[in-house]
Length: 297
Image 1: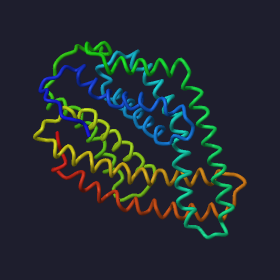
Image 2 (image 1 turned 180 degrees about the vertical axis):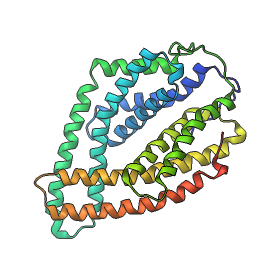
Image 3 (image 1 turned 180 degrees about the horizontal axis):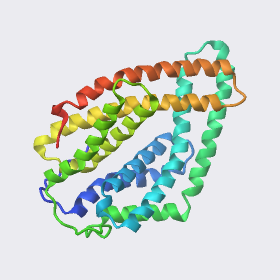
């Protein structure tokens, strides 16, 4: 959780640095571990950091020098793709392994074959990632991000490095992102269509990252609401993520060749049951999130 900064009128460069410094630090900290095979936690940490940085660049786009921002966004997108391939393989392998442990004993050999193929796909994705960790574009990206996180003069900004009223700035950031999330929920109504739920998930993630980015400037009088909001929106994102991941997992399992179709069908059936439970839970969380007491801006 972000620590509150006692600054009522920070400069825009201070706000930008406060937003990007934590994910930059997380990415730099994960870097040496990414070079070690099978370090799933560091892959996850780096992926989350990359997502937050991409969100921050979109959030502060009006303030940033366009060419600089475009180049950094392109590199982050490339890194996100590499990390995503490894992370998705990790998640799918873990989920299949957990489900497989509850399957009948006669399926052990088929599941072992399936897990071997998944680990092979993970190793291929990991090799592609580690190959790029020594490439110029990636090293340059890290150096650029570190410099931006330490920049006190606003060199990345194209707008004047003016002071802003913290409380008004928080509201200016949150209102449009919250409005887009509410619109996505309203469009879904009582539907359980995967595409609409995924859209809500995307909006929830953007809203959460926006809140975390400007969290240090939330007034102390609103910190309790801020904490409540971040907690509930993280729960919403997790439940909708379970629905989305289950759909991706089913597609990935169906695409595997040379495995027992009956075992795949049984695992897919259990994944579908988990997705149905997550679909039933997200609206309950939304009611808590949309309550006025969770609004901190």
